[in-house]
Length: 115
Length: 112
Image (tube, rainbow over all chains, first blue to last red; front, side, top):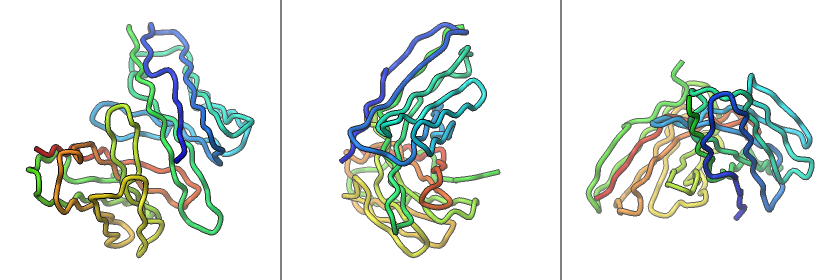
């Protein structure tokens, strides 16, 4: 099956620093999604990307859909303590003629922000 | 503003026991999904239901069954629980196939 490689696996940063994480795939996706998961909760959608080359922002978060459609990155600017959590990328296939879009998840990036 | 609701939140079972995990969404979504999350492995799809009345296997379906009871509800059943099924289980839903999935808060299941 498809594999997503997400890096780094973990990050320890100081409040105020910028953060960058990325995902690469061996296959092409039609959509890239970025989720954040906090302890005891389910993943929450942060950003959805639908076109190759697309750059989208959501507050201090910026994500890009790679030109090759095999990669995506997420940047967080001026990190704050509440940014702590696990960040997941997910690539979505869309198969013609069906109503199902399979999601493949990366392994996650654990972010720790020191005040 | 419930979104996706999963019950129970926690459960401990003995090997061989059966159990049904419940999921309901109030967003009028057509598609629903069951995932399991294990350390270092991200989320893996167990089963999905593209629309009411249909279900299909995902990446790791062995040992599980599902029922799409109606448009709102999608249940996951473990007929004979095994320790390898100890995991956190997430239900998700999406409006259509090309829309992002929204997740519940999970069921933490331990099998002894």
